[in-house]
Length: 493
Image (cartoon, rainbow, N blue to C red; front, side, top):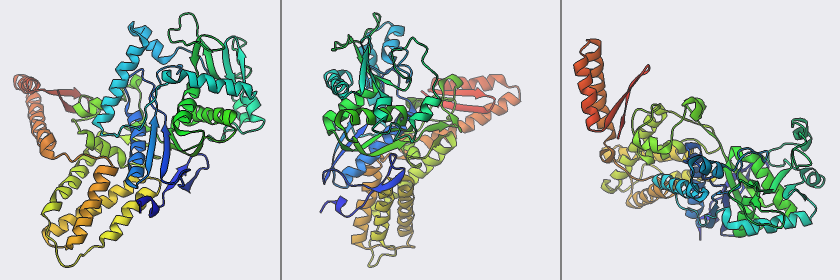
């Protein structure tokens, strides 16, 4: 009997605004689509947090015995600079600024995306389609929507008629917006737009003469609308109706709203049963932004080369930190939070490493079956990783009690504890068992802090020769001191 027959998952469905019992369309099979990156820059930490949420969901569904087809796309064309169908294609703009081909941009940042996710120990999706690989499918969907009277052609571009669609189906059903409110809050068109109404969105855009990325279509040489790409790829690999569609909270409107409208207009039924959205990542209580300097790239976490952190962190520590917040909660990225997570992570790994040395007894002082079900209950409750981690810490405490003789466990319960703890820690949460010794993090930090304090004393005593010597000799072994008004931190090369 597969585990999914004994475990009932409840998923918070953004469409209904409630937790609902998960029932896949086909028993034992799950189709899941997640909006992937637009590959015109290095993947940022907010993206990583979103994809990590769905990596956990993918892992847990597989753990329960479901056969999962997980589709996560690569947007390599058609994503304009704003949602009003204006501005340059983001990839083409990057290519123009760097005087390279757009597909060089795509290749560079797709490789970066995969490298970062590999460092965080993500499972690869079942299929990773690209927008440019599905131009034909997108053109066929546009033809169908035009035939159904819900799109119109103007000067070689094709637009979805939101007002006409709204006459029979509600536009805004996912984001809980009404078209009347959208009309009221939207500025009138300036006369230069081809759209009938500001709320309409592009299915196909005619390419200007200078636009490099273009494909032939019945309407013009051009490129597909960003919203259409996901509808085409999800439909091709998961069918006209599938189980789960995920992405970041920022995609709920207009991107996912437009996906629903397109699919309804083409197939006359809702495309997805469960819509899931991961919440945003902030840093030090504020929005992450390159313009303000309140920003960190994933690689900088691993190297420690960022003024917002005091040291380098192992990818599994950073993963553990992110999983201590529920995927629907805002996560505040701070150095203190990482430091606390690092201590907790190694406490859990130390306990797991003790398992093989524990001695069995005739009785167990803790009900292991009950604890095991608590772990499942946490994940069954909308994939609640913080509660799961709390249960794993309960197990770590119990392991230490067995070691010091204040608790006992039978042989069978010990095997069950080992199996369950390792399954949830490594298979479901995707953590990697790294030791303090392999990172050398605590000892290195302690030694460098001593030298930082000695240097501080030297500067206070105006012994600048000694101060400079400490700084320079640390630099020679790859440890860079960073002075600021808040104090001195260090990074390692």
